[in-house]
Length: 280
Image 1 (spheres, rainbow, N blue to C red):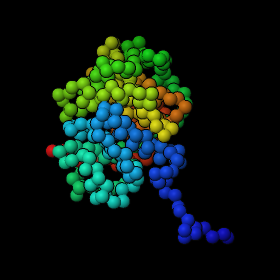
Image 2: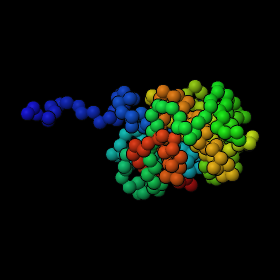
Image 3: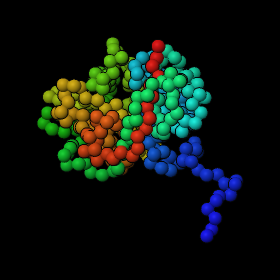
Image 4: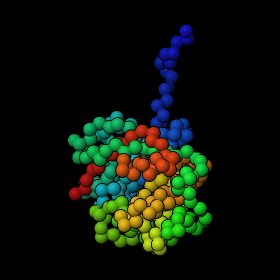
């Protein structure tokens, strides 16, 4: 039998080297699109951001537990060093949430609190499920007689999307909210788009999509409490999911929201790890 022991000087690929192709694995694509999103929201608003080999982050605001995302791009083998780098960009007065695709050491000694282990889910290209049929056009999407989905195209529409997101998620620590506190018009590009669902003519739900590394990230999905159960959340999620129908779509779900994505054909890949560093 031939030896399976590699030569001592042979490099064994881990899957997380910076120069490795994005499509080396689907998990790598999911990591890279999340890292790109964290940078894009800040960059397009003219706010600080960093994209390092081990992590990426955007400083979108100085308040709000979920405002400033930090995404690990490699396993966290040196937490003190990496968190010191992050802290140089996001000082103690500024909150951030850190998402790791891998299990991490206990980070409480660094002032972080464990948020949980949300599932990463993927939907491969394919037709819509019959239970959630949607007819799309370039300007709107019809989910039912009372639900209309419109793509956000200007600052006024983005202000509506931002308000629905903050109230629907909810993000009460961003109140009082002024337009642009979370989303700036520059975010609306060929690779990053948003949709708002209207129920009986009133804004009801929001979702965003961001394309990078050959996949589509579905983000910022939220529905106003009064509109839940009307199909608005599913309608905007479909719009974001199918924004590039030939690409897989990925998202991080909550356990409460997971059944909706199950019905849409998303499948769980693994659980990631989420931590919060409160500001103040």
